[in-house]
Image 1 (cartoon, one colour):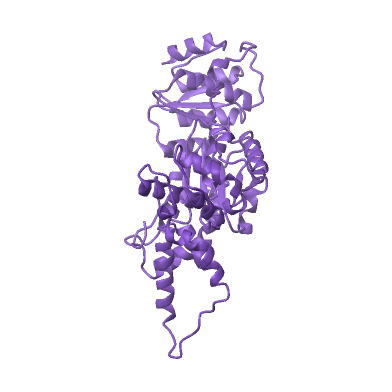
Image 2 (cartoon, rainbow, N blue to C red):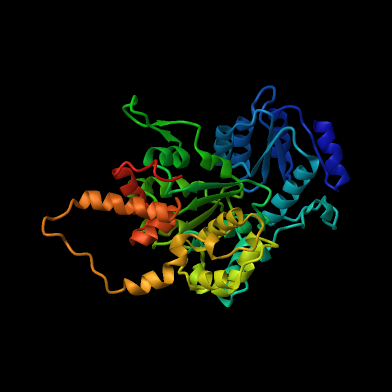
Length: 430
């Protein structure tokens, strides 16, 4: 493997020195400066972690890439804490190794005297999705998409604010895929509004607490670790339980990508309500993007219909109903309605009969009930039963879309999820 790497690197213009033992390499390192170190974890004598510690005592800035067939996420985390720049699992692709080396030397601000003046351009991927993939030409999208493009050119934390269903997660993925620093790594998405506290602790903090344990124990099961070198997307970050926030912010501050931590994770948060002040230390330098709801960019309806249902005919009356609707569930609700109408139409033109009843009745019903008031019966009511019944109705009307159901009830999604759990209605919707 050393011979293969040496040959490939020399062909790319690098001067390469190899060693079969960590202690021998440390002696060479002490006598002569190098621009970058490729380090295996499994070696005779000193293991890679021990060598990494010694290297960092001599130099805090030289890039160190770990190569190992014994790759586990906990080892990657330990190596990151000790100062590893990047982490490659065997078997690896030589093109990938060359790209990572070029990127590390460039990011570190060094000039590699042993490298050819011309960069190996063949290693740079150019086929990126671009932000034209975000459907819409509304003027209200021009600033958000411009900010998204700027975000893709940086390593800063990104905040995407907007209503559920407005395309926040899709935009987050486009930023990740178009970013030089993260596009070749994973993006890990965790929905903070859907997971109960024990699962959130496990996914975000590696804490697994069961009813058979008296105290929380650290495990190696947290999905956040898979985002190292890539992006961690916390969807609906405003729904995170308050009891978790302090520990989470402290924890993430150790791993968020920074110039001195290029193998860290890139943090992306989506939210609707303002974030608590405790986030300030992590998002002070963040790029904030605001996405408009669908009801404010109805001029994009035709484009979205063509995107979700190409070559499908929508009758004029149907389009009028769609344009008159408030779209509380935003683009996600539109996509769901388009799919349902297409199934009902069976390749025929889509007419009003293929639309959900609440959408057809929306205009007249909303006008006729503007001044209605719910009157308390003389015998009183069971408020808990009424609340439960209204939640069931909202879930049925929203066809299981909890964000849409929450808006019908004037609640946040997190509050609706709490009340669904309180009334044991988890089986009412998918």
